[in-house]
Structures are given as structure tokens and as C-alpha cells.
Length: 138
Length: 127
Image (tube, rainbow over all chains, first blue to last red; front, top):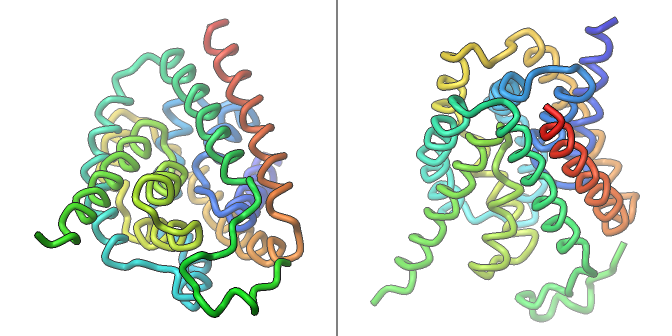
């Protein structure tokens, strides 16, 4: 029964990832904490483990085909991330569970605001001169 | 002066910031990197998202996972069970996204996320 729940949870989280172009972790961590009743640290560690394989590869292909990937910037970001993630992990692990839980809650609210801001009507792509006429909003 | 150097430095710092959020909160980091690339470094929304996705292909969280694992904070079984669902769900979500007004979806999801954040803080304060 729990296995079915966990599998279903993965599918729901994945749908959100593909649908909204956001990371799986922001969905997975609260889901594990509130649905599976896991400890905040355990949920975060498990989420990081889930994110190790390149689960965004399918989505990346779509962006790549449309020429919307800056690989130089992507590689630089990845280098920075390896460093940053190790710093973040070292800060989070010794933290008390209530502190981390509250901090994560604040981060959720902050991310929600960012996500809401992004929801504003998309401007027509200014850097595509000549392509503007073909642009049809779905 | 090459204009590329300050941009590269900004991008590298974006990665470090995304990485800190990733290790600290157990997330991918894209949710932080996409807005920074877009709002501060002038990337278009699509290019910011595509660039964030390529940065998330290598296992950048490996050092953070090791730190959590050493403290016993990784449930390997739950993780392995969630991976196929997330992967398949991602494909389904990507296909679904083409048929749904994403602006409205984002707002509904952002509202739910904000409420979840409030709930999370409240439950942390209650102990």
C-alpha cells in the first residue's frame, strides 16, 4: 500500500516538473514530509538522491531543439552548483529539525512569490527580430 | 576588456547560489537559478530554463547527498521508488503543458506552495 502511494507520489511530482518547468525537489520534499510523514532532514537527503540521475533530460531535449540552451553558462552553473551544494549540505545537516523545517517553509513562500512573478503575461521574445509575426500564443 | 568575463563570473555565482539552496533545502536549485539568470543576467525566460536544465544534468548534488547520507538522512528505498514516477510523470507533464494555459497553472501552484510554506512554518513552531 505504501509502495503504491510512493509510486503515485513520484508521478504527481513528475507531472508538476514537466508542467511548470520547476525542480522536483520543491514538490518532493513537502510531499515526503506531509504525506509520507518523513523527517525534514530525511526528506531533503532523499530528494537530493532522487535528483542525482539526469531526470530532466527529456525536458532539456525540447529546449535544445528550440535553441534555448546556453551550454557555456550551463556548465559554469553546474561547476558553481557542485561547490554551493556541498556548502548548503554542510549547513543543513547539523541544523535542528524545527529550525530547518521553518527555514524550508520560508523558502517555499519565497519560491512561491518568484513563481507567481513569472506567471505574468509573457512578453513577446524581443530578441527574435522577424520572428514576431509567426509567434502565435497557444 | 572582454565583456564575457563579468557575465561568466555572474553565471558562476548564480550556480553557487543555486547550489547552496540545493544542499540546504534538498532541491534541484533551478527554482533559484532561473529567476537570477532571467532577472539579473538578462537571459530570456526560455533560455534561462533551458540553461538551468543543462546545469542540472550532471550529478551536482553528489557532495550534498554524501553529507546527508553520512548523517543517515537518506531513505534509499523511498528514493528508488520515486525516481521512475518522477521521470514518467515529467514526460506526461511536459505533454500536458502544451494544452493548458501555463500562466493560470503557475498561479494556482504558486498559491498552494505559499500556503504550504505557511503551514510548514506553523507546524515547525508548534514543534
